[in-house]
Image (cartoon, rainbow, N blue to C red; front, side):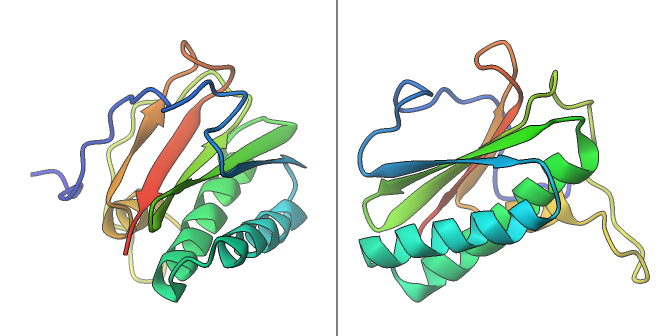
Length: 150
């Protein structure tokens, strides 16, 4: 049985045109460098605080943004990373797009207790209500999205 117990990571079209998120939303375009993880977190925190979302939604969204932006920096050859943050009632949808050609088929694996990484998809699955991947055929670059709700 797959460790992805709560969701099915399948392609899902965006609710709106990928260049213009449904208001209220924000596009965050950053260089794909290590310091952009903190920059993305800061911008997302500011937006979520402005929307007045619950602390639990904000904290979970910040963790998801950190993980997804880090994955772009570590696992792709992207120069840029684009993060979309879109309000969905009392929750939020986060999309992070790289400049890559898509994800290689991966199976989530159990990381050893000493490993510094290797838990990203399991973490995303545990935190998001739904998540998935929009392959490069639909947009430029591969997009991983997640929906966070109270």
